Image (cartoon, rainbow, N blue to C red):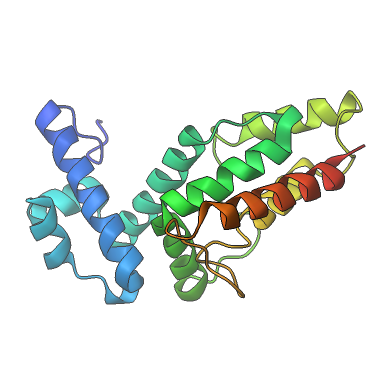
Amino acid sequence: MADSSLPTTARGIATRRRILDAAATEFAQVGFAGARMDRITAAADANKAQLYAYFGSKDGLFDAVIVDRVDASTDDVPFDADDLPGWAVRLYDQNLRHPELARLIAWTRLERRPTGRWFDGAQHEPKLAAVADAQAAGRLRSGEPVDLLVLVMGAASAWSPTSNVYTATIDEPDGEHDRRRALLRESIARIVAP
């Protein structure tokens, strides 16, 4: 039996993409509870039947948006286990360019209250394996690879919309961003050193 959540035509794929993009904007602005399916379908130039055929429910749509945005971020930010300081800086820049992902994560924390590891999936396993290989070769400090990545991502998000203290914006002076990037790069280099 074919999976009804995966459109097979180019038009179906385009409709699904428009729904995901419209839903990402809606969920980032008002969260899960505040999101309205009517606004999402109107913004996506789609209808509720299409939305429910692809995603099943509002919960299914929210989950698909989170996975889609995390996957896009993963694809957009090149990972190198031998350059975790550089990866942290690239994540910092990604948060500046795409604050909606941090807002979606914040809404997830507020409304869903997840615990443990949030994202399991094939796209993350290569990162963990690369960290483990670098650790085994003595190029990175020992410890659980997932803990090391959580620490690096947390530091990279210290100025993101999920910060408890300060939210940086792309409109701030370049010198401010350069100062933070340098601090982040140096700090992560010290943290991950063997």
